[in-house]
Image (tube, rainbow, N blue to C red; front, side, top):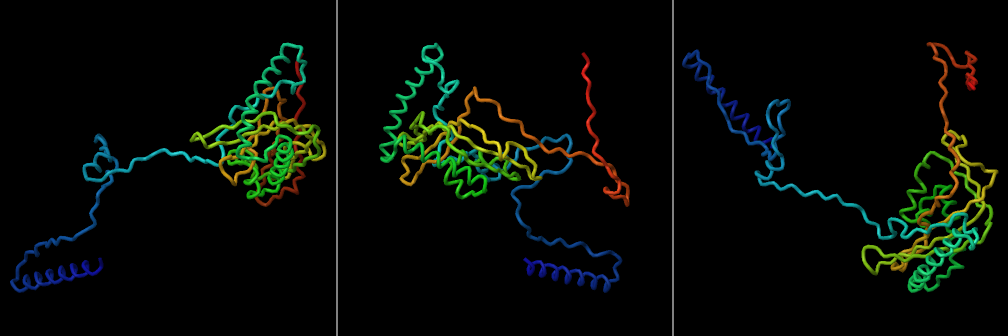
Length: 315
């Protein structure tokens, strides 16, 4: 690109000098005529619109490009599909109120018993499908194995071991467990099992195609745990490391049955409507200090934090 421009400038200089010499020779007062030389530039297919045009209607860029022979690529709003796990819980288990401790002689207890029988019939059909792909599946052995998966997954969460956590939980459960834990310290410990874990429901749904089967097993686990969460300043936000609590959980485990290398992983948790509310989170609040003048230090002021005044309620 530099060589053609240089040749053009040299030719322009020669023509200008020749015109000046001819003018001096003929003693003509008139200035030489301007010389216009064509210079090739880059061809532009799209010219941006001018700035601050009032009263003029804007042209459609797609129509203008179509007239110039350029075809815009059609944009598609695509969503990623992960076939390693499902996007939710199919037919979630509905825990009975009071954890099935109502008498079967009462009206509500009879309804709960009828619902359990209906769910158990569908679970038996799902267990048969699961055993066709996993011949070693057993509800008693699976309960103990699933409980260990739950303990290992929460242990990896406290240590922030991402590789191990991905192998123990599904892609749907991973963001739910790690959301909001970036600048926090989690201290979790499994104390003991109050009741032996047991399988309460099993489902075998398919996704995308008819033969693409997934196994979902709901586990009831009643245990004693300790949980303490600290913020980035080291202050306690939730729970306690010394006071254990009795926790009743309904956990869902899933496996891609068609995949020969698939394994059971934690998929989600079912929270019943009658479950008690969670404890409130204690947040750290900044107390504003005094305004310092240039040259002053905070230690020299002996500043004391003002205590809130007592409020008297009128009768």
